[in-house]
Length: 103
Image (cartoon, rainbow, N blue to C red; front, side):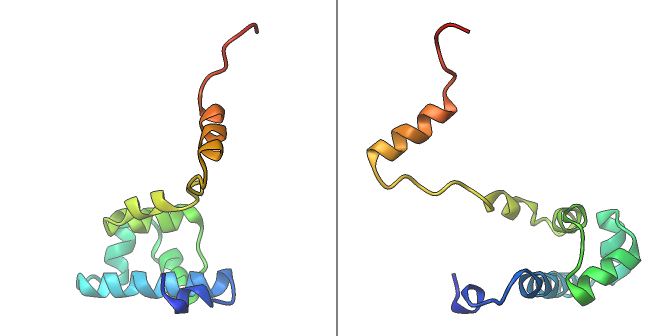
């Protein structure tokens, strides 16, 4: 992870950065804002607000990511931390397995 991403001031800075990256991807494809909004199934006004301010619903961001063929990147968010020991791995596994015994 780059140092620039680690030193962001907060959620709004990240949202603006994400919107800027989306804009770059859109421009690389030669798409207008209306084109991406239509492909994503969102209103042009909502998409424009996202691109200029970074403000958008999660639904809009996911639809835009899907239209840009980048949706799979969201699957990497909020993954549990890897186990640091065998005991921790066993604890994590216990929570995933169905419990046996009386109901």
